[in-house]
Image (cartoon, rainbow, N blue to C red; front, side):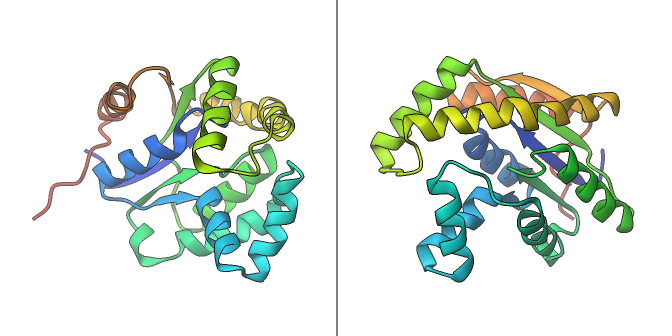
Length: 200
């Protein structure tokens, strides 16, 4: 059994990666580090970062690599991430993969597994439209959704090829009930001997 669980969950917007990431992180006893959550918390608090991010996301654009990377590095340097973490929303392109590799290598660490949630494009769009209605998410307009999915397909999907070459990607069917999907992810991680460390 591995003593660490350094994970990344990847999937298109609307794939449920935020929900599944939080569930898996809790089960493994590691923090879920979601760049989206960090950004939204800053927006709600009205911080300078929040105002900056709000303007960027309202236009359907993504926050810069430099800004996102700094936030992630700061979070992973906190004590609760010493033995593991689950990243959601970062890295999202090849440059960020290289930045994360450099950061982890300096610490003598590397990712243990990458969970790819596979969801058809139509399913993602339907889920995002529903979320916009239920949560009043102003950044979930049809145009913004289409733009973010296009960016995912052109920039984020290619990072999976990098991780596949390292043999650490587990593709999981992201369609089904929350519990069914969680069970599929847990089974994939257990097959890699990634389970919650036994408490003494």
